[in-house]
Length: 114
Length: 113
Image (cartoon, rainbow over all chains, first blue to last red; front, side, top):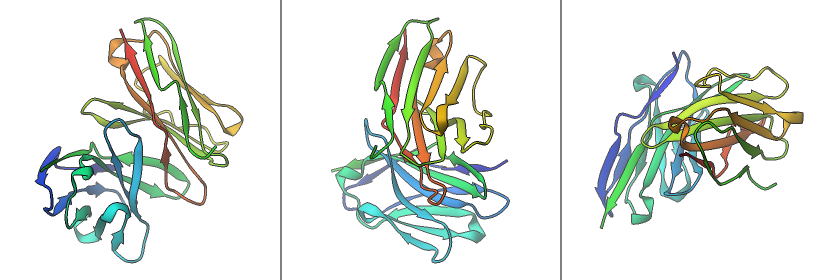
């Protein structure tokens, strides 16, 4: 079955430190991949997406993600975390074609210490 | 409208009552999704509509849950005989044919007491 896995439920980093959130997918073919962020009390906002081409994708708020086919991964990174980045992050995938169903991981909660 | 609109933003209902949650997608978007987000559970897929195709109802947790989409636009999620375990945030999203990015509404927080 198609699935998206975020191995880390909760991550704590210090402000200014680097960040990497992990995402693995299990699909028959490479899906389209997304990262969303949900700040407390807010809806989900798209950070970035990967469809094809360059495997390093730049997004908003200084985030980037790297697609690695050999590892079935799409990890989210940020060189220097800001306190405002504290939120929950969701990885999602879509198989493509006429099926628009998005499958989400269970999310990673990011806490940023001052 | 400019974004996905959901109403009400909050709903408190008594156990056993029926509730209707509404979603107004972005104009022209053919795909519409409903997800449920319970505390610490991530996003649980409920149902999605794609154009005039039959909806994918595979995520509906029980026959108390149903949804419809009238005229390919507004969608209503109905929960009959609500139970306390139905308490959650219900999120709606839409996406276009050409752009697969899903835009989410702010959600409806449902509390069953």
